[in-house]
Image (cartoon, rainbow over all chains, first blue to last red; front, top):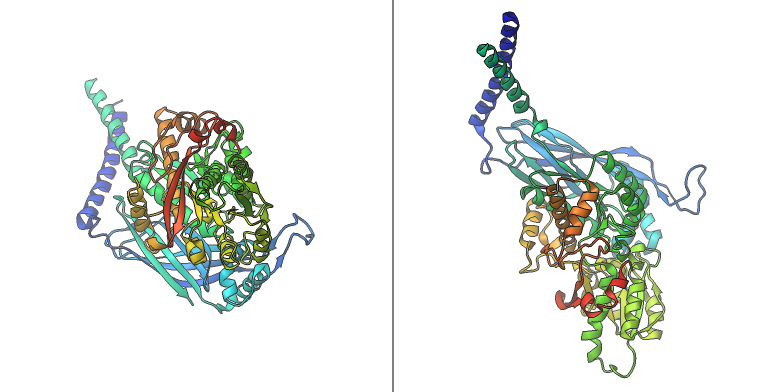
Length: 209
Length: 414
């Protein structure tokens, strides 16, 4: 019985020692650089490059066309772009990136807005790389162009209606492997927080290439 | 014996401290809410601003203590205004145990309505379709602003009260109304029956509908057809771009009618796209315009927009942000009440939450909100604005329930 109690007591002491050690470690870290509203420097977010992550070329067929299998409908080629960012933490303590969000414009047309809410910690003074995918659906992009970009298409001399919008989409989808037109990352916002809940937001934008 | 007891007590305390002190899982007690938004599709010109507003409002909710101390985690997705994707994301929300969903358009909201009713998940959307306000048919569909049908009735009434009575033909003939909209769009067609009914009540002559696509930027043929009927007012049921195209063509071709515009076609972008031809147009809104002064909570809307989306100047933000806040605020209040009642199930959020709100002041220029067990039209007083010199000016508040108290109940579900 005495031996059993001794083992239990020893186990408890080991657990307690671990716990105290972790607390001490945290305290030491906090004493070195406790995050405050004043000393929390906003991390930088820089677009490194854009990658055509998956490519199917350009095609569009309307619901008048009978597919070999599956449901008849209006379908346009998808386009999967990946945006790779360098996120640099200038602080002497780790910070968490809560989300990153930005709008993507092909030339003067805003076509997509993406947000990544998967969190990650960036070590003190280090740079993480973040990959954010943006899926462009041909049909969806067509409707977006038609409802919101009709006047701009007309001003660009491409004409009006679905024909003009499809022509524009085809040009973009076919020339994107060589990045022959500017892709704008705009209205970007990345939210960062510390363990203590202090929040900072970084705004960013860049045109690629 | 006493020594042994102390030893056991010591072990227990140390173990509990260790386990609870080092595990963040016990510290997080998050309530999940889903959000379906269009940031890339056919309604992204307004959908993106609305989506930003939702996210900012949830940050505010969490800063204010969340749902009685429990933080909210928002699962927000772009569905590109595609119903199959909306249905797929809805299934994800269920797997994530979302207690409520913040939805978007009329098409997907109406498509999901039987499912959310079956699953008893409150679905607070930006579709203000009057069809969704009947608690008997769609009990879990909710929204904070006045519905499209009431808005249409009120806008026509305001025009009749203010403009028609000063018209040289007043008392000599009936005023004439034409509706211009894309009939295949659920949003566009939602209030048509109501506005025509209101036109009959007010003694209008009603012309043939003009079919205008949401994609239209040339509407001269429709304007020519309208000219034959010589309307005094035109109801526009579409969204901003095609409405701007129609009123520009009407201006250029000297149609001479007043344009009344539904909620999603009446914002700053209309002034930008239509220029001078936007002057004199009228529309009902479900809340105040972004940045409007002396509006409760507007300071927070602006503060959170600046804080969380500093890359977008306030001048580029729209009334859609305020609409999003309105929906989040009513959902927040309903969830707090349900949680306080000890039950955060969908049924409780509806019964102990929404349906206990009576003349609840949301702020943001939203009509005081009441939901009953049968009637989910949240407001009765509709604010009508007119664009003058490129600015929105409040012209009249129309209390439909007071003015047509004998008819108000029968208009439910229109």
